[in-house]
Length: 228
Length: 362
Image 1 (tube, chains in turn yellow, orange):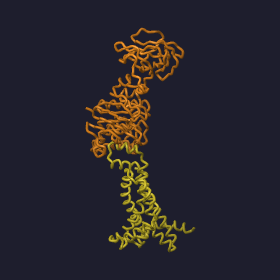
Image 2: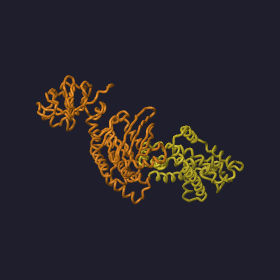
Image 3: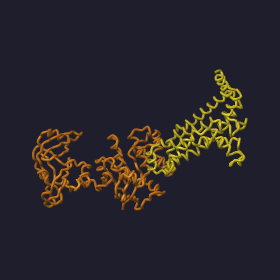
Image 4: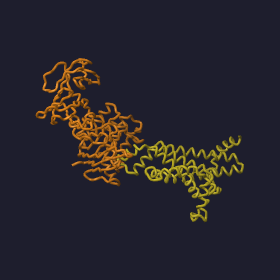
């Protein structure tokens, strides 16, 4: 049990002393997961609206598939990205395997179903009456969709928070396609995995606490956005 | 020339026909009231006119141009119409943003937008609420936001669905005032659905009676209220006295109808032998304690069978060989000391009786 207490004090120490390596790793985690979350949002919010506002055959099935993909294992996504971007793979010509961009791609694939599904259910929470009212007031399809997104902003921001949470906390994909290269692709989660296997439990726990601290900051920022 | 024309309109939800073969034309600047009980299809008709829904059959014409069933043109026309839904749905935004959104969607210049929104908020008496979130307002206030949000667009056509349902009398009066102001000042064409007869009578130029998905009667308020076309309409417009009878004589347009052995005189051109309904509005019957000298052709001795007080009015049921309901002021009910069993004279004019044909299937 002492490890946890030691980990806590170590975390405080590392944060206060602004340990350069920790700052660097945390910054990279934030950058990679922030970017993947942002890009996934840019895809999921419009795509979710598109799916929500259109009636087509197989819509129910599509939503079921999206929801099923919520539980895709991170290592499976890692494997998929590895196959796609390996030198011999179909996207091998990018030559970005074991580099931060491919980690962004991996995390995007991982969180897109989650954000898409939650966006759709967020929009479903806005009544048809609101849609009709907007249409009556002369909103075009796009303007209506934008209004409904704003009406559902609490739930939509929650979808984004969920996406970010899954991205920053995953380890399987980052490890497989990033390779945990020190000073280049090492992020907080892969660092925790490494330090634990080395037996450096305090440092691992400290890094874990730092990760939660990052999540707290992001949540505060997004909550501000929610309340606007 | 009509601004809006509805031709051969039929609409079904899940194979249930809610509107059947409606034909209607509404002139520019007209105030048209659509009256009918809940579930008659009023809202559906308004939704179709607002182009929110595409009818199963039939067409809508705007300015004599047929509106296509899909495509961009619908949005352009919809932007000339405003629809205030029955339950006001305010957006989770400030009152100001709620009112401004329609103008923003039309790409109104910012300086003009502010002026218009401020002006309209003042008009509906919400100028102090600009920055309040609209979701925190009361029902009456939300209804005024909804009204302001539509009026700021200066629509050519205003559709109102039960604009005062669930509002208190003061709010109702305010909204009614506003509606007649808009109709007069802006020459806005208004179509309003209401189940409140007096509201229709008070505000509308013409009235359409929608019963069970069918437009049974269209006419000016007098036509509909005093000469309903059939028993259902008569019932709905408050003709409480609908009595079966047969025409026994007709002299120069004054018909005599035999009702249960009593003769009622009425203005009617139906021939002798016709089976009819005689309809008398309860407020057209006067009650007195003695037989009065008057020009009214119908006077019957009767016994009071029931008295119900309805605020300033009293509803008096009497039996004069047939059952009649009269509406008198509370004061005269007290002066006449109207109580069950009291003998009175009921008097009404021949012009106060509306005779209509008894339909075969009734």
